[in-house]
Image 1: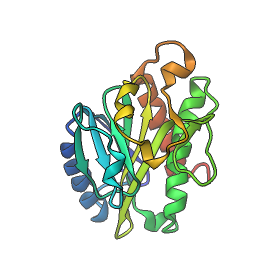
Image 2: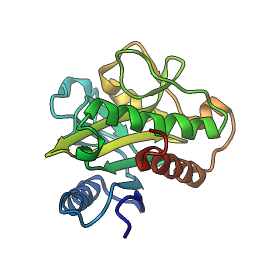
Image 3: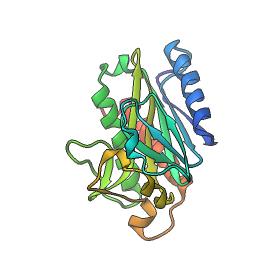
Image 4: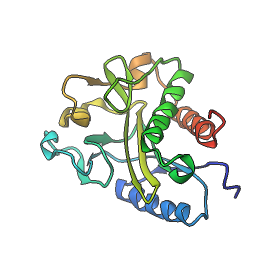
Length: 210
């Protein structure tokens, strides 16, 4: 493997805890230099996840999805079918040890992917993630240990938004959540979105955009 080129692995649909296990396996391999920066793409069965300092009270009900404590940053979010979940296993030693930049780069992956489908998404100052107006379409949460990153982003393609009624997403009470399909008013091929995210990850993390 040419370690300068990012690797893309499509895991398909996997249980959340299996996704965590795979992230740790890939992080160990990245730390040892066996592989280069890697993006793990997947979907999960319905699950609510809590960041390390998340307020459990933000989970309003848990009768429809499992609740799992994670080691990522951020508050509570939802993962489920119809999302493109991307776990970025990256060595930040070669990227200035800049966690803020890493988060913005992951947001940029989603912004460019959305643009490929005609959606002009952006950021909101002071908030993480990617937004269409006042509605979040892409969530973000990462962990960095010894400068190797895990976790990443979740982009809503056609997921069931009723699951978000069971939580206060990311602890934000005054803004909504949307999907690409709802914003466009038409079906969206999730495989095409996955490929778009992979392409833009390679662009940004290969360094061709500076």
